[in-house]
Image (cartoon, rainbow, N blue to C red; front, side, top):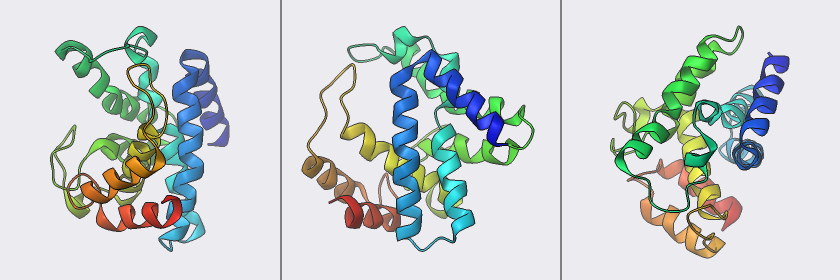
Length: 181
C-alpha cells in the first residue's frame, strides 16, 4: 500500500507539482485536525491518506487547465469537477487502496448538500472526506493560485467560520478554527 501511494504521489508531482505540494501540505493539516477532533491514530492515518490522494484524479487533467489564469468555462469546470470521479476510478484499480476510493470521491461534497458529485449532505458524507474537504478549502484560500492571490489567514478563518454548517461540517470547521485561527 505504501509503495502504491508513493508511486501515485510521484506521478502527481511529475504531472503538476503545485497539486502534489498542496496534497502533502493537506496531509499534515488533516492529521492535526483529526487529532484535534480526538480521532484514534488509525483513523487519523486514514484521513492523512485520503488527503495525500484526494487530487490523484488530476492526473487526468491537462496542466493547462490546472494552471488556467482566469475563470474556467463550463467545459473546463466540468473537466475539473470530474477529478474526484477519476481519482475514485484510479484508486479502485490499485490493490490495497480501494477502500479510499469512495472517501476521495466525497471530498467536494458540502454539508448542506450543494457539493459534487453526488449531492451528499451532513453525516452522509464520510468524516474523512469532511475533514479533507474543509482543510482543502482552507489551504486553497491561503495559497496563491494561477487565477488569484492567496487570502490572508484571517480572511480564510472568517470564511471557514461563515460557511460552517453550509459548506463545512461545523465540528471540522471548529477544529480548523482552533488550530489555525
